[in-house]
Image (cartoon, rainbow over all chains, first blue to last red; front, side, top):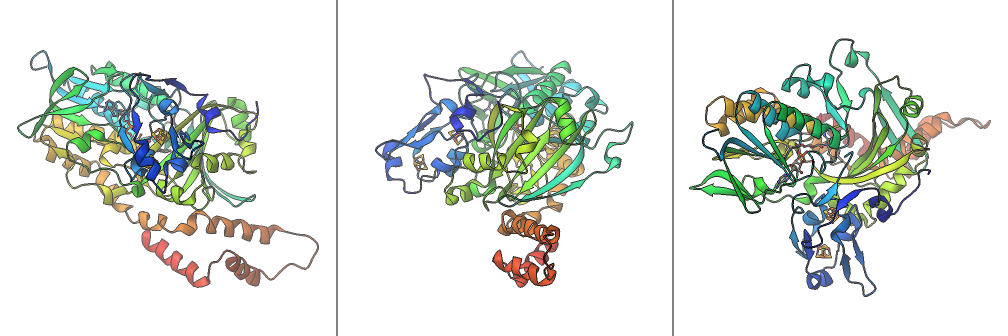
Length: 97
Length: 427
Ligand SMILES: Cc1cc2nc3c(=O)[nH]c(=O)nc-3n(C[C@H](O)[C@H](O)[C@H](O)COP(=O)(O)OP(=O)(O)OC[C@H]3O[C@@H](n4cnc5c(N)ncnc54)[C@H](O)[C@@H]3O)c2cc1C
Ligand code: SF4
Ligand code: SF4
């Protein structure tokens, strides 16, 4: 394969994740997000996990999270209700870092 | 150990700070428990990738010879990009890599390096517990006496927060407030596998030699820059952005980074390679001015990036070496038998960590000049275009053309001088 411009989903496909299905480590309050004008999460999440759905509402999936913490420090309107590190052994496993 | 369930020290986080601390304490015969949330030490960590070797030598002279390092850096390069053009400066100095001496710096992969260093601490007798997230601190009468992880409570004479940039532990203890987005950078990075031989041919390196390349002008004017490090059999390619400015810019940082990868000056360096990982991590950018006077509380010391120990001078980032040095400082403070908090602050001074950070504090002002991230790289390539173009026409008047270039880039001579003066003052 040659080097090419890749979508975030493709790039995340190279990583090893142990997804915690029971306890997501990031939880949003969709009502607050609805009212949030700036929505910085759309641009700053390196994994592009924050997207807009058909209705223009924020949709988010914690499965590909790289655990950087950028969304947490950028979300001024507190739509992020909970942000913790995943429980031990869960989440991303970098093999190179 | 005093009692079955109490350690001399519990360290939260097995990054370079935690492991250096654990190593030094265990070597001195202290009972140490180091707790890491990742499945293995390093599995949650991402760096650019260079380690300044003096720190490793401070931990244990000669240890570097068996360390999990990639290549010794023999070429320091700075590249400036405009849309399609590029200017590259290459600096090499044999004195950095003299025979029989520890090379000046190495490229590293953190998942590999951190696991190795934690293993060394383990060999010294430290206990390393992985896959456990520390949830909270245990406080009794204003003193930190242990940690909580899930259902488990663990106790120690001193707890060391080595939990990196998003230090919830230091925050919980009240040593730090919450992080301010404008004082951070977010780094994104691809690891691209390439055969060692290809890397060596492409970068003009001998066996074991490596390149550290800094890239300016690839962030659409956002405070930040790119980096490329050659590893043994891969390339670390990444970009750091100030997230507040990235949000204003409106384009996904992921997208801007992918464009940098495809730049005509970068792509040929990667051609034929295979991406094997995509990572991201925050990094502190504020330097000395962001560090509180007191990096401790009764029963708790804060080390490494949790304490804000990163030096970003624009052309290089130092965090791993400072993490190691602060780990040693904390361990020595504990070993000294004096009150650990004040002794730790003294050690940070005598190991030159805080003085080093203070000495480069004004770089922060220099890096605030936005023109560094787009205007100046554009001007540089325009100037070289002017100097190198030969087309059979009468060569232009260089002075006149230079002024035109400044004008085209919306920069007045006056502004250029002001930036120059500010730059000189900053350093
Ligand atoms: C893109 C980028 C490029 C960089 N480039 C360089 C460079 O070239 N050279 C350089 O020297 N520095 C560089 N840095 C900075 C450097 O990577 C960091 O400063 C350094 O890793 C800090 O080390 P640390 O041990 O303090 O923290 P970390 O390496 O972050 O380690 C913290 C550890 O604590 C664990 N942890 C966190 N919370 C908990 C918890 N509650 N319970 C259990 N475990 C926990 C984490 O999993 C992690 O293993 C760069 C940083 C970035 C982001
Ligand atoms: S922590 Fe980082 S990767 Fe995870 S959702 Fe937030 S910004 Fe995206
Ligand atoms: S997550 Fe935060 S930044 Fe994103 S839309 Fe919701 S409130 Fe706004």
